[in-house]
Image (tube, rainbow, N blue to C red; front, side, top):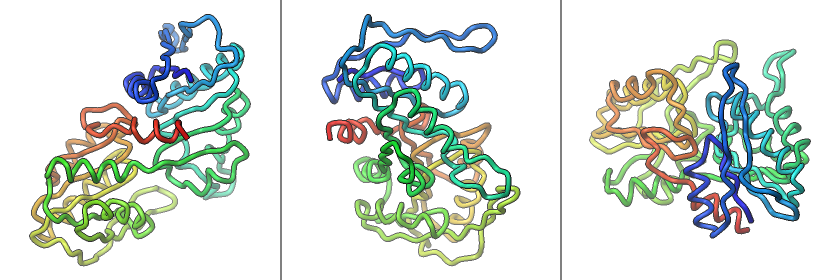
Length: 292
């Protein structure tokens, strides 16, 4: 097995290769003045090789998706036998159905392109709607990094007997995973999303957080608006310490500042997207999936 280090996930790719004791294929990368990407594999041939391409597709997602497609097609041209795309953050997967008439079904288009470029299997982490991914022809494996986040809080002794909270009832399965490790109980913050504007409001709900440590888990923190509201809401219910935890720390604009300003002790994320809060590596999770 050979691991191709996509420009967006070099460090994560290196960790995976080390775990697998696999050969690393460096990728020379540069951006032309007009914004187009140039990529070159530092290898003569990939004939009959099993290849893993590691490339997250966080912002700038269009550029990183194009890079992923270019690398896949290049590996196919170089006669790779089997190609797996490890895409920790899968761009456009939140547009997982047509909510309104005439909308594009974004994730379907992206998967079709990857398949056309020779990808045989996709591995991602905490996709927005895993059920949708199972409907495609190409095998897509969705892993969960929530146990790794929960284990981090436990090993670092950041909290005592914490309550694990999800944003919305539909995400209860996320905090059930966390509570299987933290053992402090779980609940959900009641949320309602406007289908047209996408804005989220919190609805009144008494939570078991008084004088207790709390971790609010989410798959993605993007603009940070909902998480910031949730932190403030929980603090107003007399929680002792409140942490925000997410798998994909997009942290657009002043998201981090907003969440901390509203009372969060810290924000903890994974290296699915490299950032200042990416304290938890998902390399062991991905390596285990690849060995199977």
